[in-house]
Image (cartoon, rainbow, N blue to C red; front, side, top):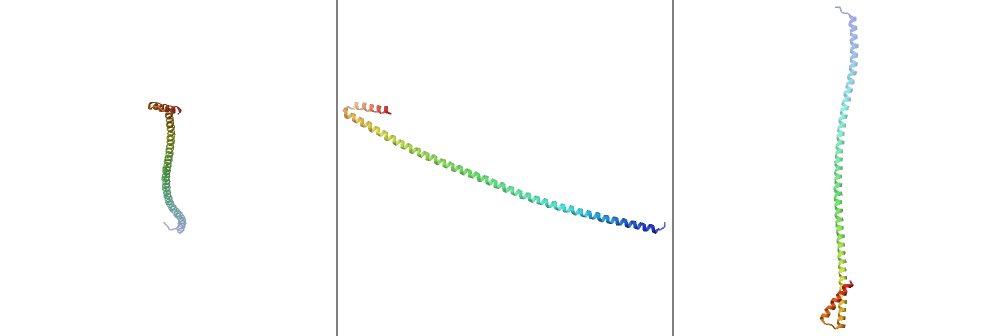
Length: 160
């Protein structure tokens, strides 16, 4: 084997060209890989931040929903209490009106009763007066007086 300088130089040039191509290609490939790795890391960090933000928003909405439910329940309870108060007030008002009506009716009954008593007293006085006049006119005995009282009562009943 003989050492050939031209072959050696040719192989050295080929090796340097190959090394330069590989070196530049490898540098570019590593740069692309590094860029891609950085982009993936950034995307993962962004996804993590967005997920945390989504959890935060969900927690806020859950709290708002709980607050709204509590307010709704409070409004419902207040409305029920107000309705019961109104019902109680209306019941008391109705009871008072009924009591007033009963009182007025009792007063009317008492007034009517007094009028009837006065009327009866007047009629009794009239009957007694008529009986007395007949007794005086006829000067009758006790038996005849009883008969006349019965007649007068029957006459008065017939008038009614």
